[in-house]
Image (cartoon, rainbow, N blue to C red):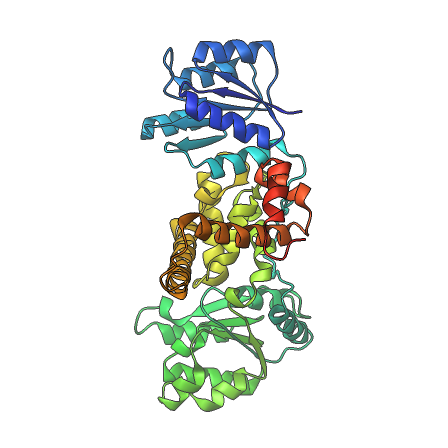
Length: 430
């Protein structure tokens, strides 16, 4: 059985932390002082340490420093009510695995502790690839992969479309790398050049050898579009182009040549937004996290992964990559928890909870209105209303536990006899 050392002078919090450790199958040992904690750590080995900074006899940072000096290899989770910059920096310097602020989010701490104590971690880290990969198994990506394979087998032009951040340039790099002419891909983007120099730079790019990628082709001025059309007619060089614009709209507005649209689009690759391929998020997140933190073997906690899968990702894979880099930068350990994610992603949990609470409030209000008016002058009492809600809740919970009262009692931490009595009172029970 794993052992957890809790060094915390707040007795209520220490008791809550001990309960959290027991729920994870660990044996807690509690000390209300730094010296007492050091003595316990000197007498026995522990698998994790929960350490408050504000102890009555010495700073928790001094305790942390002493533990590490003694060769303690157990990960230390630091807890503080005063999250100063100095404390955070010093805790990281001394080797704290994670840093939690009071009021403590027990769910986050328990998730971190679970990942440290349980050997069966839910998601294995992906090795960082030497070259960028196109990752996905969603149906929308399978269609895209089929076009990529076709593009690799020919030297015809390819028009790659999709929202910003979907990986259009990456797709072009993959096509160029796996084509018969494996020369390095040259990239030209018109808006990188000042006025007056773009055309000369474009002509120089067209005159080179090997595959050429025109990024955001819709931004090309009309004269350069004419030059590109002429180059495509000569067919002396493999041309690929990307755009996030709606080219038919540009054509209708007279901003893009219709003939060039057809010339570029001999093969057309449409990349889906990340919101259309959420089943790919775990694999993408694992790969991007490994790329952002080579050598650290980091994992994404299930609660954090749930937030990733629930986010709408307006910035697509590029936004996910940024989120993984952020998480890697702020996480001192090896497990990404919800609070390591950017606020725009982590706040989805609170927003989602608020929506559910509001839906519940509205449903409960409507149900009460119906119950209080249906009886006429005979208004149901509080116990009757509460029993009706409890009956519904127990029925739902029993169904989730496949009709097994013993499992339900254990999950609810309820006496089995008490649960059986309540179940016998359910409407329709024998």
